[in-house]
Image (cartoon, rainbow, N blue to C red; front, side, top):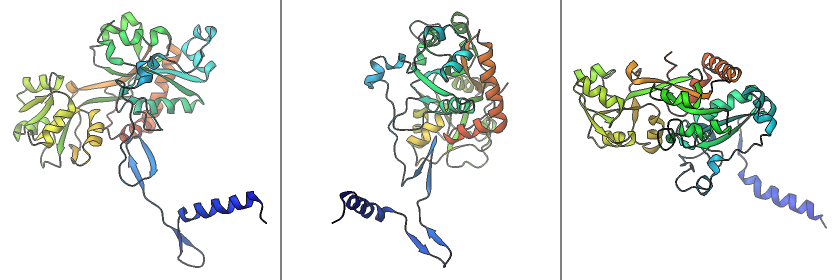
Length: 340
């Protein structure tokens, strides 16, 4: 009579063994293991999968935790003594970088569930932390409130000014936010990349490489309404039609209403996920014109000079090694170096 433990082990092995990779002898000394090819998905390599699986994403308007105040919750405890420290000392004492980001600003940040891609800025920050044996603690903020109720600096008042984080992600240095920086007493880090309006087509259009070609070839492009790009097109006689929001510009191109599209480079990642069969391509070699290109940076208190140097030095190192470029491009977004 066999012991119960032995029977359980036999049963477990019997159930699992058919799932093991099959091996076929190629010779007496070697064997070949059949396995699925890894599928590449923006943001993370999920391992062997068959086909694209739509990620479970955070939806701020219906998520009960967010609506109940989760966005203002900091998961790590900060003592009264630590609150009085500088950001750099507090980071060292906690073993964590305290950061705030928008709960839904794809592909830069989002509150991800089930180990889904968290956003390129979250990955950049985690890489900075790991290089110094630190963790990252995130608090989620609606960054659009910096233009709404409580502005200037509304979102900053709900986050960094309350001492809930030492770093705010997701800022674009356009100059239009400058009036918000003084009341909030915050400054930008060094930029880590730049974004801008890029030329996108459905399939290839031979001879199209620039906006001059758009005019020369009389190609009608779709643009987001009330954007800097639509103003530029009006001023420079570029044939165009405007639509509300970037995704509607893409839809108009796929429906044949326009021949090409000029959209914000951050919107390409989402467009490729939403329209996987659209054969969407950024015109090869296209770089945003200077008037339609802006740097991306983070924000911190202007008194935190040591912490600013910590982040700036990390950006310099990661830009030189190409790490930031690799992270950005994994999300299906074109990388452009800082314009400074």
